[in-house]
Image (cartoon, rainbow, N blue to C red; front, side, top):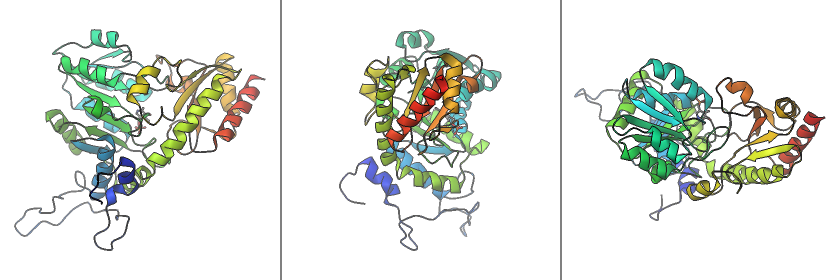
Length: 384
Ligand SMILES: *Cc1c(COP(=O)(O)O)cnc(C)c1O
């Protein structure tokens, strides 16, 4: 690598410039060994002991992500986004009080309400974009963790990360941010005061809908981060080397994918705002979005690849419109190069804050005119 400081996109494009020391290949090999030779003196001078905690391919991918998130204490990859998220909560102790976003990834909310509660955590849900509500919920000396998802699924509400960090820290709590829908191209929560950032790397970090993976990054290598490391090492929610390799390959093109996806999401948000069959567009890039001003401050390079629309004609029209897409794929998940559409209320079930007339759109890298025309014809057919 050069002596001059390089931009994250340059470092990511070359996966930190690593080469294979044996062949000088520009792509490093996938390390698959589960065990490593001991030295004659019984030590492990390589630093690699056993495959569960130690894998070079996983570590290389972690180095790329830690660079992207400006994570001084590094990154840890997990077998899924849920494994990463739940490791943070499992690093707490029974009886600890947690304040979490009311609008968040539905499976995690459901886990918090069932498993985490069973395990003795006291979870309180608030609108974390409402700082007064957040302040009122955080109890000094009692609350140990604030968990905020921003932009939050599927309404794309924006939590002010710097302000939330201040509130959490004043009470002696950590702030963890699920930044899956921002990606480090748009927001680096650790630089704004968050302690931990979580990613469903299944989504835009990998970007090709062919890997399930999760990640955590930390600002400080403190006792809490060490608890998280222990949880991963002992419970074994690790990422396999093949998946880590694919994820690293995906991250090499993160910036170009995000540029296309984010520009298209903005174009779609603007054009759909003027569509007669769309009642409301939810996208933080639109000035009328309640979180727009904060998003403009804490997001760079655009406002992300996710948006939602509420259709005129209610739930039936929404489901019918989703049934008539031809280019969009009718599927859950997000962040891939192919655009996806989903009626969220039917998957989230009872207790979800998701309106029934809402369709969630994950913007891929297809031609934006083709995407708009597909939605336009689907909305018209759905309404007929
Ligand atoms: C998908 C997702 C998760 C969970 O990740 P998995 O890899 O599916 O376990 C968590 N948070 C957000 C915002 C997500 O979109």
